[in-house]
Length: 172
Image (tube, rainbow, N blue to C red; front, side, top):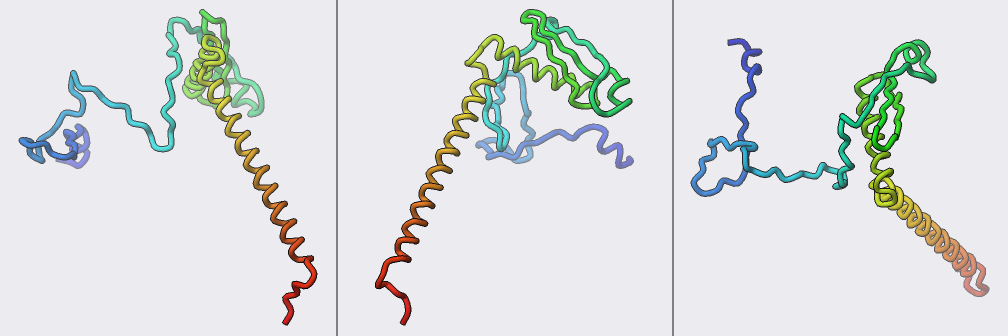
């Protein structure tokens, strides 16, 4: 049997976990069997974000048009610009960020999802909440920087005044 034959079919997966009484270490446990619930695992460095409204593909109209902008013939003669329209709300998104049609389709859907969320939820939408939080963090950083600058000025003034006090020469 060749080595390529070994990798043709994946080997059954086993989990390493604390063994409850009655199970042997070599016993294979199913990853997900019907009736079991998978708990969501948060990726490292990612916040647990609430999901946006899902888009129904039947409510979308998708067109592929010729690109525009810099890039010459590679962008201007290929139809890789995606125009996506959400029929119920009338929102139109045009995406030509990459040369790949598939990537543009994914990006257009993500942008459309965010715009539809803003359209239906207004100030309570995920995008607006994130903008408010970012603005709040920016204001807090600005405030801390201002306080630090004031402390530095005060320290400098105290140092200058202590340097100019008569009778406190440091010479021997």
